[in-house]
Length: 275
Image 1 (cartoon, rainbow, N blue to C red):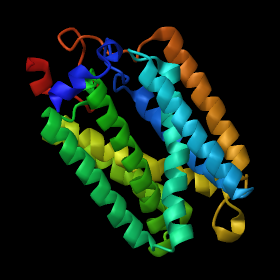
Image 2 (cartoon, helix red, strand yellow):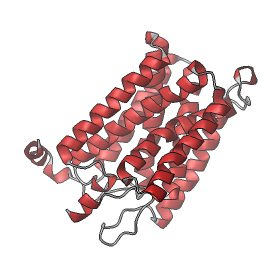
Image 3 (tube, rainbow, N blue to C red):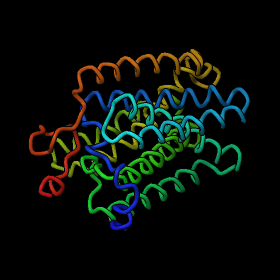
Image 4 (spheres, rainbow, N blue to C red):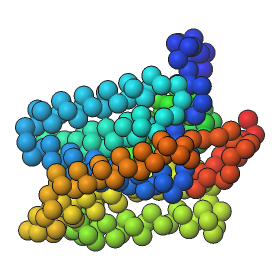
């Protein structure tokens, strides 16, 4: 597998890590993208489903094509890809439930198995799941497959707690706010390995952001504040553009060589550093 990757498109291999440094800014933008993806997907779904599918899938394909074309990390390109995955991943997860009638317990199980399979394949192939190792095309493919699986799983989890468990949007948001603190405290106080802590938190950001988006956007008759999905998507988009613009200007989120980089927030791979 390694040999075939080297033989294919050698001139297009990344020149540097293709994902951002893990900072507080990363987590803020990540949560915003999840809320924006939820609201945008729901807003499009309220119109013509065929148009929504074309827009979601088309945006997903274009953004990932652009991300794979560049050979190093660019904040605007990376976060465009993340937003497109947020919208399309939500559509996929909702589509399986609505179109096929699979209950939320089934979709949670399905996407959890899919995520575990991708992570296992990635680890068996590369020996690490650290995002500081995303310096080859194959690892980048594994990374974005993982991201897509986390969005689908997170969408299903948020719907499961809000509907099946009957917590509603706000209580679900509060529950996931507490849950996302678990890996942070475990990493900070109890020396949990940062890589599983990172991916645990990464999965939880999806239902966390989506639950808040639903609470703000959905009508009061179903437990929301009624601002509308379109409004929530627009406000979140403006916030994302502003924060990504800040990252573009400051370049504080560009990964530096591991030997010179400070310890990032909840993600570090000592094995990769030794390599």
